[in-house]
Length: 476
Image 1 (cartoon, rainbow, N blue to C red):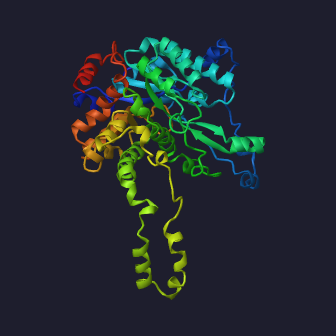
Image 2 (cartoon, rainbow, N blue to C red; image 1 turned 30 degrees about the vertical axis):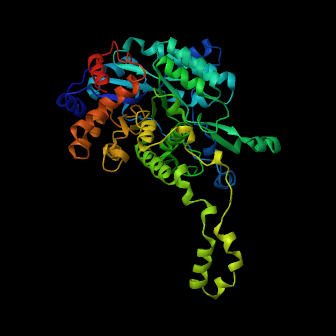
Image 3 (cartoon, one colour; image 1 turned 180 degrees about the vertical axis):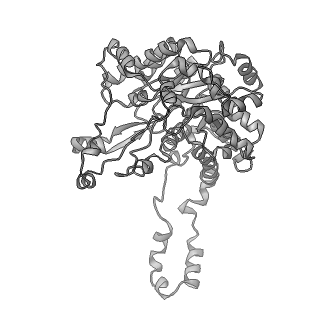
């Protein structure tokens, strides 16, 4: 369906000398068709979602008593009927890509985002299996410009590996995983089973996980699958308003992505699996820049060689007593018997094996810290994310690095009111002088090639940007 006039994004694409990749477009599933795949996989027919959210049936007294989180409402476009239908119809999506100024797009689910969190073990695995069959079948003929992501559940490493291998056999090249699994706290489950679902901890597949997820990460490397996370953080304690969806929404994807990135980083996963590439989607660049800086500042002050500055055994009690006697007032002087206890806040003794919080990362230098982070983590930035530029600012990032932000529009969802304007909106960062032309090339093309093609050099083989992607991979 060619555009009658050149869109703002198409005009932008004409003036730049490189392809544009949207690293996060969305499928809005046509549920009558998806339902057939779920039934064929052994599940039940999907019911069309309606307005059954119990929040709307509660009085304010009930809401204050129960404190339910107010979830999304009016979350998909309606007035722009063309765009709404575009995200549901693969052929129409494909035919409009030139109007969007895009050469290639990676497509993520909408309803399918929630399948990895289904509590029933059997139906979760059936739904993910069926969704991947649906995505592969519906988008296969458009693979020269489109790559749908597979959804891979991770309640256990075994189920993750099983669906990862199934997705790979279907020809899908990106694995979408949850950022975490909520698991009940064992003590709460034993003492009060009815409340256990509300007393949970976040298992993020790296540090402190209930299972050893290394076999899953190893299989991702072996299959050359890039990994993506697009989980929500609504429902976390600081995003649990009973009245306001936008209060709950701001920053929630980024917060969930940070849970996963920090877990894999400090759990040593990026040390053990150097080929692993992971993208945290939707608005996470600020969290990524801060996390990259945080790991440096904390390692500097709390790595083993620096801990002598903090060891209570190193307090000079004689000097401290002299200072308190000289400068303390009468009230302080009357309490000098408690001085040692006040200075040596416990625990006094920490066994050597518990002193290095960075041990799993295998770091001995600042360069090691960089290498555990920069090549592994990518952060999705929407068209209107005015802070995407900070990822490219070498003045603020340790070792003058650039955090790997990728252009990712979230096409199909409420935050994109006109698909044909998204690329032009992203380009405003260059026009406004927030990034330079080379930074924008990395943002719109280079970083996505490294993310998706790094684990699998054949990722872009057979696509319209095969040659450009191969040159980009060779250069890096």
